[in-house]
Length: 185
Image (cartoon, rainbow, N blue to C red; front, top):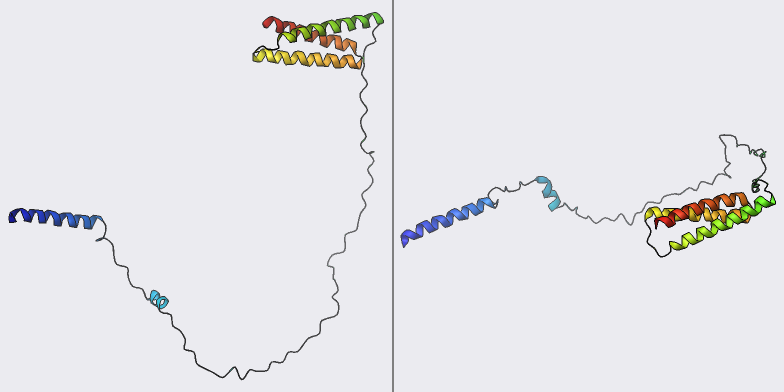
């Protein structure tokens, strides 16, 4: 049994030294002592010597100097002159009057024809737009609907302004586009 103990002890000692060297204990160096640290560790305290200097305080004479008379402001550069800007030659902004609408003179027969065509085209446009309600439209169809509504609104505005030839043209465009939309549904 003693023979088996020696290899176990040798194995134990070799593992102990291996652990000791791998943990870094053997490689760390001890810090060097420095003289500067010594002064910080033990400061020198002066010894207090009792003195009687508090009883003999010297008398100091204070001479008051009178303040100078009022201080004058000295200007280094001359003051800037105040210049009034010249009046502007342009009159103040006024609202621009609305531009006159130039409409061609239509005879009574042409006027009644334009009114009838405009109303007929707007009716067709409304009927074709009613077909699209409740249906899922593609992006091209929804773009076409917005164009038709734009032309229709412009035509109704032209009717309010009394421009029947322009209203007829816009209503015709709205009707043609709405028929194209109705055929694509």
